Length: 334
Length: 192
Image (tube, rainbow over all chains, first blue to last red):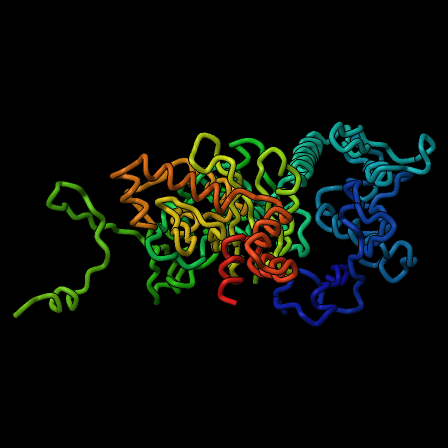
């Protein structure tokens, strides 16, 4: 137990797990200060990283990367560790698990190249050592142009490529969005004074761009007498098409699919927020089943929407609101 | 709070194609809340050849509230008051949209001049004449255009009024105080 890693929450006096914590609450144990990103080969902070950029397995002793190094994992050793060795608690920790079934003396192993990390400098864009670099340089990612694709880790490559393409798409969308003007204030939306103003307000039914503030201002302005709210305030100021809601977005879209995605993301986000009107079942939400926010009771159960349908005299089906008996009785003439 | 930067942009935009559209907007005062719009009378109507001035007041809520517009040039038209110059136009009232601008509103007014709507009148007398006696309406409208909307140069106006027997300086100040309206200046001169 003594070679457990020091709990970083405990170090700050804020570990909530107490006795049950899987990390050590003994301040004599070394903290794990090794940068996990560096281990994977890419730490974007480079030399500015506050974690230590050391390898848990040194390149020259690569043969031991998967197998515990006997010097590190035996319980009697920690006191004799030199400070530089102290920085490798991860290897010691990993060794703990493997100790049982593998002989500590068995050091000759073939290590699959996927276990070698790639050079983090090359992955971040530039390796000063170039061809002289002792570390493996990754393949060039066609999207970001950096040598950050590990040649032997297909999942990692795929993940990076996906992530990178997504980022690139976002950057391109942002570039295209720069030029777009709001038709109300006539300003370029992404050049507005405060960051809060630099947002588009998407209307669901048409493709006219507005800044979120202008379109919300217009929709919330008080109607003049004789004004039909649906054909004016809730309509697009340009084409007068009726949209029931406005979706905020930091980028403008160029295809209907992109718009769909923005709207879906927005709705999904709202659905994770508890509705303040519903108030965990204690309140009454005026939007009922059409509310975008989450209607969940305090025990986590979701509200089940039961719509009551009424047949009107004309044969149409209407959805009934909550009817109170008092309203019915109040309307009676006795 | 008025969005002055938008008003400023609209003015610049108007300035750019004033030759093509013939529509001008210029500020009356420094703070851009009071402006004057000028539209040419549409060709093929009794208003052809006239230049009509419109007083524009930008309200607090602009552009979420429509600008207040009123003819300062007298016009004989069923949807414009012959007395006050008040305009009956939906886009200046309940059909306003913040995507509309001063220029588009003035274009709408220009369109209103060519397509009168006597069934929804602002001036009942004019509307009645339009329906019952169209020829008389046309000639009255043309006469009003000739009299009030044709811009003779300042010197011509001064000359005509001086010929009536008023002093030169007196005439010039009267024309200036009545905003270039010759008839109004004459009224002022006569009333002393």
